[in-house]
Length: 124
Image 1 (cartoon, rainbow, N blue to C red):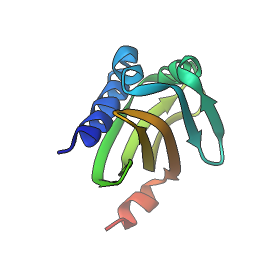
Image 2 (image 1 turned 135 degrees about the vertical axis):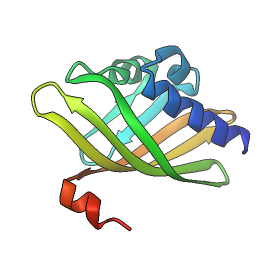
Image 3 (image 1 turned 90 degrees about the horizontal axis):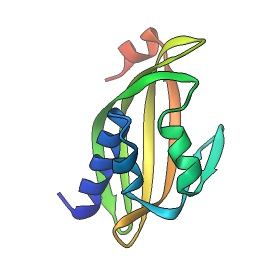
């Protein structure tokens, strides 16, 4: 496993534990997180506020199905689950593209698709 892939997996483990220091230690100061169709977060301070977003309870459960690395990008696909304070439990599929500058993540492009029980059972 390359150093960049290890960094991405350390970042994901930090999110699973709501470990701010671990997640932020993987990022450049000017990191940009684009959750396409939802929002853009810029810089470590904004990013830090999303690690434990007050709209959600606890830490997300994240499963990695596939990791692919090419040049300065690591792509991770998987599924996840969490609990929204008002809407309750939810499940999703995700695809994250991590763009590196040196040894740190400079940008995260997240594509998230809500899953229903029916959609999850149709997956291969």
